[in-house]
Length: 334
Ligand code: NAI
Ligand code: MG
Image (tube, rainbow, N blue to C red; front, side):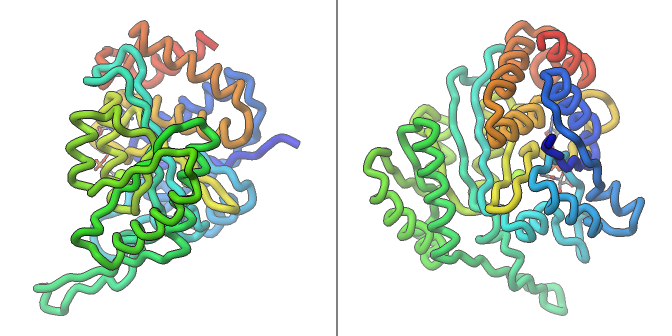
């Protein structure tokens, strides 16, 4: 039977970049069935809910989801849909690879870093969010469990082994956040000891930011807690030419959601300006996950050739073209 992929087009630039990725999957000969469901503002308008039950059921039923960015209205009453999805399906690993493509405006040409971000705990666990009645004080709870830390660090080392990577760097702030980052680091050291074939390093998050900018070739696989992973992965996207170049996979035991690292980009939405490479690369992660490496390679090569030649690239890549022209250029190479 054909694999069915749940597709959430999302908000802002979401629909146009998801359309691009699916046209490319089809042009590459991937025979999937697609089940389209809504979430985010699109769903709120149609159903009155940001995350309808039918959407949750489709994600659960098909196990594989390709998702555009969602706009979470800022302010009270709305929990982030992404945080909810990650918690609901226990998508504990957020895998965010960045790799240089020849022809971008990036400062570096040889970046190859995978950030493995813990995706359900830490500062984003949503626990203990309190604002005092007079509005003068606010607090939130960060929670790390031994189990959660062990799962994500083990995931990072297993990924390193499987992909022939040499080094795993644990990024933390255990000098200040003694309890939470402290536990994470302690467990990371225990896990590291089980992987003598892989070099292990540890680094405090602020120093890691500086080193990622100064000497990014020191990094191979990074494993870290939720908030640091969110920030570091955007930094890493900047090393390869921006958010238009950065995909991410949210992986759990029962389901996986593939998406771009960036948001709905309201500043460029509806103008045919978005670079769809982020979700095209997310769909390549999806193909890898499904064991379809040949298709993944074929699409990657086509994208690489478009960017290298500058044939119909988008503005963030130094070009003058839009999402649809870029997509067409990729399809012609397939
Ligand atoms: P953003 O990531 O949407 O945009 C940041 C900057 O990067 C903007 O200047 C934007 O134009 C540019 N950019 C992003 N993707 C691009 C692409 N594919 N091609 C070219 N340029 C691109 O961040 P922002 O503006 O802070 O957030 C907007 C909304 O997105 C918010 O409602 C936020 O909650 C949501 N968001 C959703 C995420 C998700 O669904 N996974 C992740 C991050 C934010
Ligand atoms: Mg982010």
